Image 1 (cartoon, protein in one colour):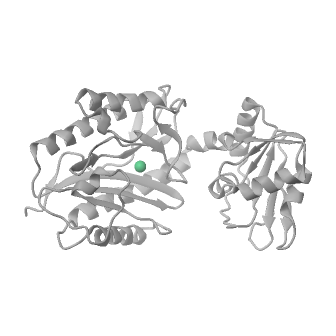
Image 2 (cartoon, rainbow, N blue to C red):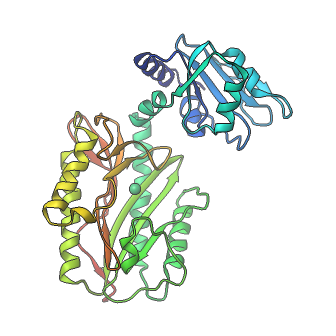
Image 3 (cartoon, protein in one colour):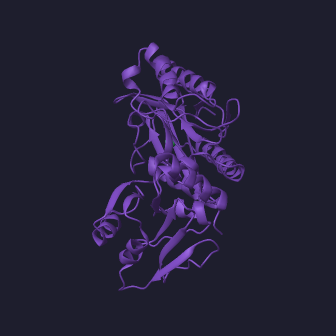
Length: 361
Ligand SMILES: [Mn+2]
């Protein structure tokens, strides 16, 4: 069913930016507006939204996308040209295209007409998606609960007999047993110096030794909403410098969480975390942005970074995940998801953050 409230919110954003028509082609965005998740793969599928409230759907007839109230359906068969159908419904002038729609679709629509001006239109949907309603907040909380359990499972299964990939596979299986549906997703398990690479995944043959940091960055979609969480622990012992690094990251992460409330700039959330780490002398070792939005996709607006000019608003959900990365030595990252509330934020992921040394029992 078409979610009229969400559609109206999108249209109001379109009016704000002066767009009369947008084409939505991103599967999660179509799901957000219609409650139907279609994955037409390489075929063309899109929803056209006009600022007068007219909605059209263009779908291949092989996919189960039944008619719904408030939307004009245009089905095409394999061998027919869907772009001509779309072009026929467009008004001359600016068309907001979806940033995630394959360029072959966008270009093919443009080739049907010479009076269209393409611009990026998906912000109008993304800004709505960024502010989670209560139903979505509850789904994010449920996913975070599984994430807490997965982190606990991971930490309890640290074992020198398991390489990174073996432990990663066990965590993935745990997620799937708890309702996660994944498509080749890799759970990050990083031992020792591998943790110094922010996007090290989990590699077969990488083994654990005393004094290593063990960084888990675990993420999965549950009922279409993602969780994402990182904890770093140490195996058997920790050096003074690694302990110091850990405490700085923990302090930076807490400072950023404490700063989150409606009205603050997303870029200032990043600045708050960065200041703690810079003041401690590790500013050039904080290699990533502080956070990213999470919802039906694991990386979406708004991001907590110097380049994001969005303002935090109630319902926004994003990660707070500062880190310090010392090449060939150690990496520490602590990540939680938060939802902005009326006067601060709710931290979704709750696994404790005090420094843990495991493997001595
Ligand atoms: Mn993350």
